[in-house]
Length: 330
Image (tube, rainbow, N blue to C red):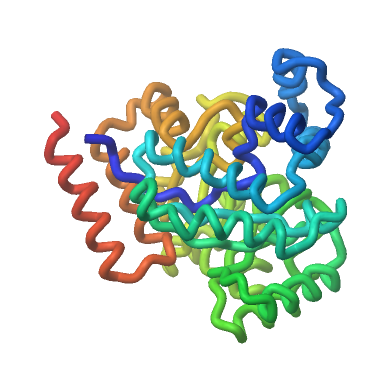
């Protein structure tokens, strides 16, 4: 029995594996700057968030038609099933596609087509969270959100991502207020490369229910007290933190300190095609590095369940699966 997992920090565009990228390029007659899979993989030596984003957005050019987005999402769901994922709350970046001429409905409906069959096909429940690029104008995000709300493709929440430094959450208060008024769930990337103040802003100005990354919260004791007291989840992505040089090596990752501090932290894969592993790979590497053992692995799984936007009944059912897994371990 695999440890049942919930994944809460997963950019669907970041699951575009090189093999599928080349397949879609051929299907859509897109000329790539890389002659081979090996040449493409050689580009994955990032020095920071921006160098990663440059490659990430270049690769997205192969996503053109509705079926492309469906195939991308189905490929992730198939891999997630092998990892033990039972529920996934998936991020989707509309501006990464509308900015290059792909109609909003084409991209969004393509992802939704795959998610609508996820329970039947893979036994994975899902939610769809539209994430806005913080380095693009807030007015653009607001317009896209209005189009989505009027457009008939259901979403479950909104978030904030992309280049963090210099783009504080406070720029997006109007966007999040509109989402809240329509009953959408609220999350935001904060405290990855940006300072702890960005986490405060996400909580107090945007009203987020969950903070994505948030590891720089460790620099602010008052913020840690707030996060612990209010059980505000942090969706941590270890491989991402190492590959983007947020930390030097996995041995430097603060996951154990975060758990010991009482933070509601869970492990996720972020952009697994680019960062060298999916959620199970992240957990296995942490277990090897820190000797987490079954108790802490189960705790991380339960934290993910608690941090999710599932109903209380759904959370209880998944928690029982984690307990069953734990009972089978030494």
